[in-house]
Length: 92
Image (tube, rainbow, N blue to C red; front, side, top):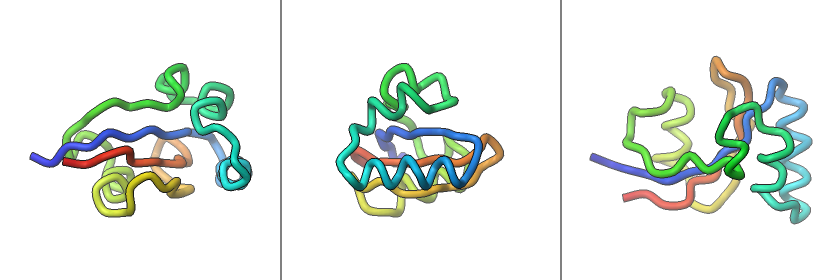
């Protein structure tokens, strides 16, 4: 089964996600922004979700993690939880 390791920042609005993505593009630290802004409990760990199997996350999240380029911040990705900025660290 395919596995991946990713980190994310979860916020309530698309505008907030886009603002954070712009900060990342200017060199802001992903983990620092996750700790400060993410609504997910993973925010305390810099957004780190650890390793997980394909299908463990909601479909829109899974699509980004398992199909889009590694080590690139993707999003905002809308799910029932809010808007995510997602960075896939590795896939197996």
